[in-house]
Image (cartoon, rainbow, N blue to C red; front, side, top):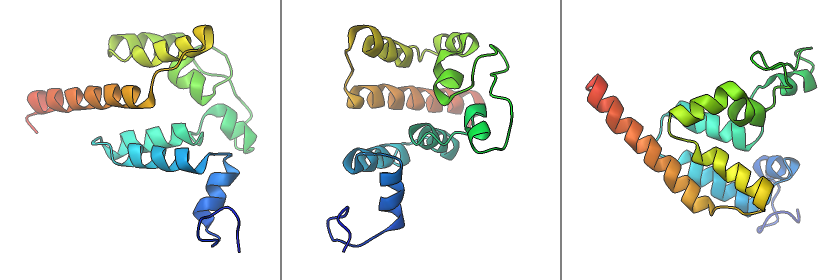
Amino acid sequence: MWAFTKDGAYSVKKAYMLGKGCDLDCFHRAWVDIWCMEASLKVRQLGWRMFTKTLPTRSLLVHCHLSKNMDYPWSGEVETCRHANFECCRVKELWEECGCAIMREELNLKVFEDKTMENEVLIARVKRLVEEHGRYNKKVCGA
């Protein structure tokens, strides 16, 4: 009998989620939201690896004893998932240029005003951007 599941059965999946320190319901919702997105497999994998903090950043590679250098190439700061995808000055420019600055704005709202946007709103915006990209890609590539 295992106390962390409704049916009392042990599973590696549940142990993995608990090991990540996750709320199991939140973890499941994120799993469904990410893997049901109409986006390329690479985009879904990136989203999942960012959510589970398993993106192979330099700080994670150092933690796993696979590298000795944690410095991000453009800024010299420690390369974490957050820094590499949101905080680096080069990446900030890219977020602005691709029209996805709302993700950074959400982070600023939380940090400076302790306000958050509903996950559904953020997910809807990301899905809309993915759909727009898909339409643009079809138009340009004819695929």
